[in-house]
Image 1: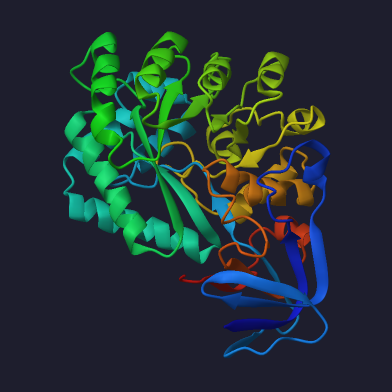
Image 2: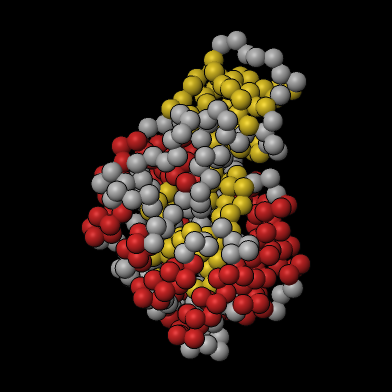
Length: 399
């Protein structure tokens, strides 16, 4: 057993059985001052104040805080090379859609990945995984989608599986064959190719995703793909990044675990999500990097909905996996309170990848996946001083 003692503040306490926070619940973070926390067999065995229990090993927090580690429910971190050349295109005024129309963007990443061996792809991706873990991420979802043909999509999924088997963080895998139209395919032929890939992808992946947006895949395409994946893979949908696409509604129709991006939404999307188990997930890193509108986070919460935030870490539109920066963007650009943003990057983002029964809060029985901060920090300062180092130790206990 391991004891963390002299904790200044234990934050993010959630009762057993609570898997997400909705509406007004997102404004509250339960805390304990001057606390201790006991870890047994890799799980949170107990916590409290006052007399500390006996343990085999002790960590003196020295007045630092303990919070649940960040959960990142939307990433594309298995990719090859870099797209820094497109960064210059963006500076020179080209839009995301214009770069894609010139054969750049996702297709550029697919070309690079095709030329990269599986071992080298794993090596490059692990650099990003370790970077995220060092910054406090303890659970992450990773998508395919830079293969765009059966061989390379499966190569990506095998690399994600290898990452899952390598690191102590929780890793969930998503088949995103429908990320763009693969080279050499007509639109309709590629939609059918994605459908044909589903059985093989289901051997590796937890989820299926479709980029349902203007210039990529239509609502009809998405409906066909998700119908084919029924009983094999749970949907997670890219929706409403570039236009009000109908992706939210088709995602809800198919029981999507999450609908992600949501830079452009109307009241119709908010109404479609009410009364569902689908987690709206916003990706402020994409808004920041591409100059897109920020999602209507406050309106979603005011409507009683839950909200998750994730990094969208990828080479073309959000080359950053720092969830503390995502939390800060939620506050600075989306006007969330620090408590709302904290819940959005912990328990709600854990829910958006199906792991909130194990991660995302201080709850007895959950995995001990924690951040121990230096003394003097609180949730407001995490967002306010968003580049000042605050982590003393990331604890991801093996069970």
